[in-house]
Length: 219
Image (cartoon, rainbow, N blue to C red; front, side, top):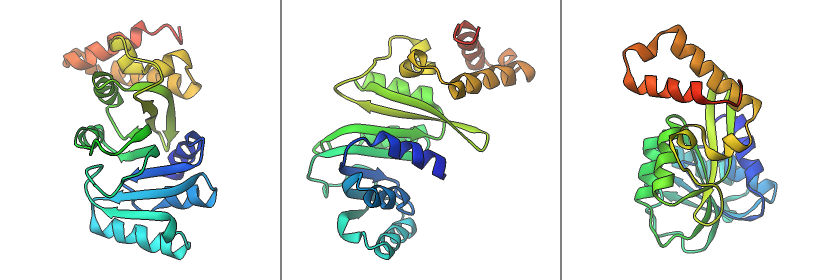
């Protein structure tokens, strides 16, 4: 993740508590949360040995190792998390990986809210969340170096639900609170499809174009 996404993730962590960062990489999120006193304890989970070692070294250099639990493991399958969690952050990876992590998670881990930032296919992630009874508390479209990312805050208790393909494609929160970045992303996508005639030989892109043309927000 680049700093812009981390900044926006941190803004969504409203109260200090325990946080899980799945795919912790260099522990940037944990270091900033702990230094800002926005977390009481951070569980860093990393599947690969080298970034796991980097996580530990960086935390040690900042004197924060005692306020963390660092786990070399695959997603949320671990049994080392036995306390209630306020936020679980899963970011910087594709939708398929996020779905896989959520599907195979240890159900004994009690998590209040998830902050999810997929690198691609946000609509597919929204479909999965809908099918598994998650609700959308917040969503924001982030632009970073010409690429767009959807940040979603979801829980099982409170928030908006998805009712149709329109909600799934755009995100129910975005439809209620359409930001300039949200509008810009979809306008650019529509122009790209039309300019390259992508819809003429792909039925899925034709269906996407239909959704883009139905949106009345920027008309």
